[in-house]
Amino acid sequence: MPTVTNDTSCPLEDFREQMSRSSQMAYFDHAALSPLPLASAERICDFALQSAEVGNINWLDWLLEAEECRATAAAMIGASTDEITFTPSTTFGINIVAEGLDWRDGDNLVTLADEFPTNLYPWLHLESRGVETRLVPVEGGAVDYDALFAACDSRTRLMSLSWVGYQSGYRIDLARVSELCQSRGILFNLDAIQGLGAFPIDVSQTHIDFLATGGQKWLLGPEGIGFAYVRREHLDKLDPINVGWNSVAKPFDYTNIDLTFKPSAARFAGGGWNMCGTLALGQSLKLLHAVGAETIAKQVLDYTDLACERLASAGAVITTNRDPQHRGGDHRSGIVFFELPGRDPVEVRKECIRRNIVLSCRAGKLRISPHGYNTVEDLDRLIELIREV
Image (cartoon, rainbow, N blue to C red; front, top):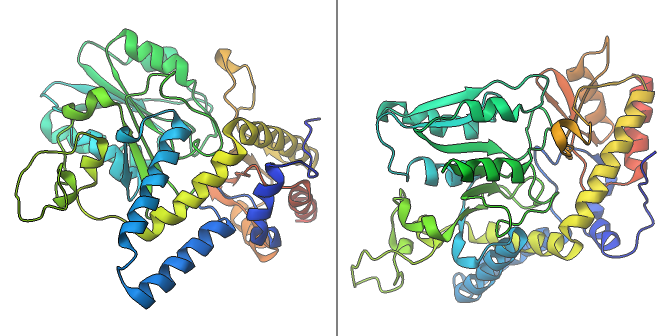
């Protein structure tokens, strides 16, 4: 049986303390929306009070704090700060690439058929420009890498994949995809929202050309703020789609109109952004960075392994592929899907919510997505309910 302990030394102990308000419930829904850490919630309150009392007097201080957030985001993925831009969502980050590349009639890109719409619609929107989106089927929730690369040809410009499948829990082998893309001169775009915050990634070691994420899931931030990574060598290959005062090299020189873009990914921000959300996200990222991605990943995988064992013993059917060596790599994630034969998942979820146990229904199944701070007692509450319903 996997070992999951509650009596841990720092930094997991501090992690749980920061998430203490969520201890009133068993929260298993980070793949949808996360509770805020105490420090992040307090930062939002402080920002609101400062804004109410003195308006924009503290704006330059906020800007410096936002740059600290950018630096922490860069450090989390092994990037440099000039490769990071703040975005309002994963969708915005993906569209930086979709709308920014110099597509030509006859080009194509490859993605998976079961992707979240965020990683489908921006590419399908390119059809009017003669760009084909090739959808590779996913059988049994597992990615067939051979089929993925068989879909590529000499006109394939880009491959765009989710790190973790939102309706399968399957975590792709980043190194394998990266190596194959590089060998064929294909750009690799990663939708990281279901993996970042739970698993480590280093874009300086694993070649990823573009990455986009929102902050509201595993990164424990508020809605309306995220970030994107653009590899330095590609900055000038993307035509900015949201050009404004904050795109240029001298953004505060308002009367000097000079459309010289910033020499960094910050050029893609365009105008102002969600400053309050950025400062709150900065607190969340600092917390995660202090705990450490390796520590969190081990806790998440051990916890979900234990959850699978106990769910199965309570009569659940686990539908997520949890084979740690499937297709030569560990594809487990923090997302687990299961069914309760003979029981309506929507009604089961309603009963869970009534008892302060938070999970989701997706594709006709129940989905849990615990983070590194969840306790064994949380799982006890879920198992007890499942045995009763």
